[in-house]
Each structure stands twice: as structure tokens, then as C-alpha cells.
Image (cartoon, rainbow, N blue to C red; front, side):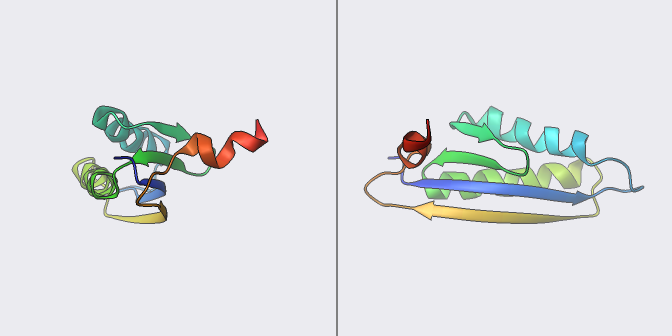
Length: 96
């Protein structure tokens, strides 16, 4: 059951101070590969799904940054958890 929304802003420290955008693109690719609903915003990406699965995706995103040569990563995470169901549409439909 979809019981959580998790927003993440991932900030990798690049090896030589290069642009982080290719790293962020790789992190978003991890989300896409996971197959969960998601929405990219200018400063963070929000995923929808089971909380345990979404936290596992965040771990994989961080591991991917290390694989790409990042020295360290800051992951700023926001979690909305509702055991009886959570969805991006339900939280934002009044604004559409």
C-alpha cells in the first residue's frame, strides 16, 4: 500500500568541484529505475510509495553518488507518512 510521500534533495560533493547536475540526473535515474511514482521539482524530487521501499531508494541514490566518485552526500529528506494511504494528488488537488 502507498503509505508515504518522501521528498529528497540530494547534494553530492563532486571530486573536483564540477557541476552537480549530472549527479542529480543519475540520482533521479535511480528513482525512475525503481518504478515508483515521482515528481521532479526545481529543488527536490517527491516519490510516492511504501515508506520502507522509498527509504531503500534513497540508500541506492546515495550509493550511486559514491559509485560516480562523489566524496560525500547530503540528503535532505521530508517524509509524509499516513498508514491508511498517501498520494501526491490528494495533497495537491485543491491547487489544480
